[in-house]
Image 1 (spheres, rainbow, N blue to C red):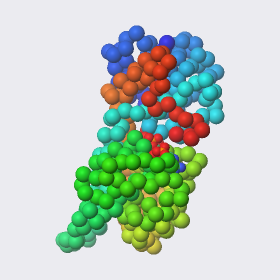
Image 2 (cartoon, rainbow, N blue to C red):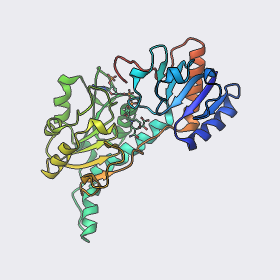
Image 3 (tube, rainbow, N blue to C red):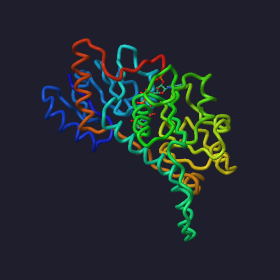
Image 4 (cartoon, rainbow, N blue to C red):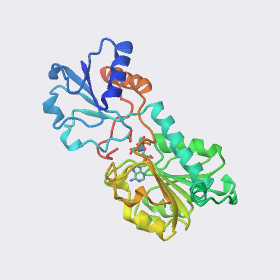
Length: 308
Ligand code: NDP
Ligand code: OXD
């Protein structure tokens, strides 16, 4: 009944300590030390090994160490192996912090003040009340809904868009492709928190940006391949979009010559908006192992037909 960990080795050491403390009865191994491969029933990974069923013949569950599972090639994972994504409070907290600071950076004109500072200009810009700023979040799942719950407290006019209809207190909810245009037309600060699927790859393109009001800003904390990067640069350079904060890119890292690095209206971070925290994630994985053993549904089980 071994659990094999295959992701960042430093975090792996923390997982090992937590497993030793909380579940000493479950043998824990750090990749590439699989021990007896036939004993491995559970794999916690950012990227599973190629052909996981052959490498680990008795594997039953793959736990993604991230909230997303787009980095997995599910075609190489046989149906009998369950795939579970990370649903844990630490990753939610980190994302709420990052998205909130990004929205506030834009709302309080910190891009403009940074440019003024470079020119030694001391000039106050008019302050807009939060209630007049319309924030829209693409994706109303674990992360999007938590971000909106926090942003609502600042008084922003909040909306969200999802695949199926959702209801969130104080949030105008839009669902499905037919509602996307209306959602975009009312959005001043757009935040992407969608999973990467065939339906969302390339969604953030010139057509979508054109549907935002002139002067809108964009924050991407979803995945790099959802964004048409030249389309964003064009929208920024034409002044249709005002600012962009990007935590994800394609490829990661961006090559040194990429225009995002130096664009005055782009702020980049290296995919750090949020990450699974071992101290809270291990509890969730242990709960899921218990559920799996008891034949109960695991938290975060992936629906392969939806792709997230
Ligand atoms: P969830 O699966 O909980 O939520 C996904 C949301 O997106 C749901 O509301 C879903 O709709 C909606 N959605 C999916 N496909 C579509 C579509 N085609 N059209 C409209 N809405 C759609 O995911 P999380 O909130 O946990 O995470 C979202 C993503 O955030 C992750 O997949 C990952 O890519 C990214 N992420 C980024 C991190 C970073 O550090 N930058 C850290 C962690 C995650 P419905 O409600 O109808 O199912
Ligand atoms: C995740 C991520 O999906 O770190 O958890 O991006």
